[in-house]
Amino acid sequence: MKQLDIRIKWSPGHMEIEGNEEADRLANAGATGPMDQAIDKLPTISGVRTIVRQKRLYAETNWWEEMKTSLSAGYKEWSPKYNTKEPKELTLPRAVLHRLLAMKTGHGDYAAYHQRFDHQKQQAGMLMWQCKGTISLL
Image 1 (cartoon, rainbow, N blue to C red):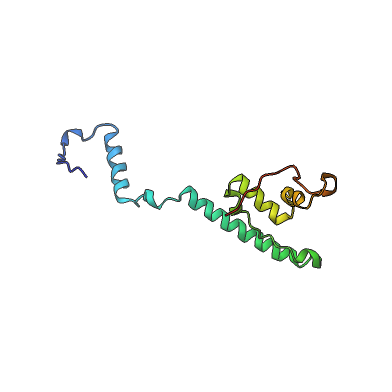
Image 2 (cartoon, helix red, strand yellow; image 1 turned 90 degrees about the vertical axis):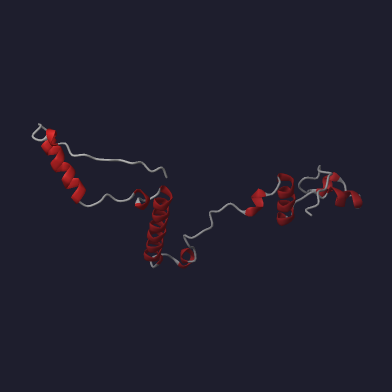
């Protein structure tokens, strides 16, 4: 930090000038009054968002607990808490994600299978019959 040599000198020539006395009184009141809150103590946008999120979750949970008593058994099993984050699988390359979803759902590229057993296209009835290529996940 740069240090400066500052000297202040009182000049009695400004006494009894209109407005100066009022300015001096306000300056003294400001100097002796309570200090302003430091800038680093002020709330940040992310801090306010966190507080709002916590209060909203608290309000939702309390509301659910109050409403739960009047619900039927089927609805009581539900919960307002659910995962809203994006699944990690969506970061995979599109071709790999395609194969992963095909394996999970049981629908995929069965062209090699049908060719091996000499099945006809009319009998296959499988999704993506036209796809001939294969991609390894590893």
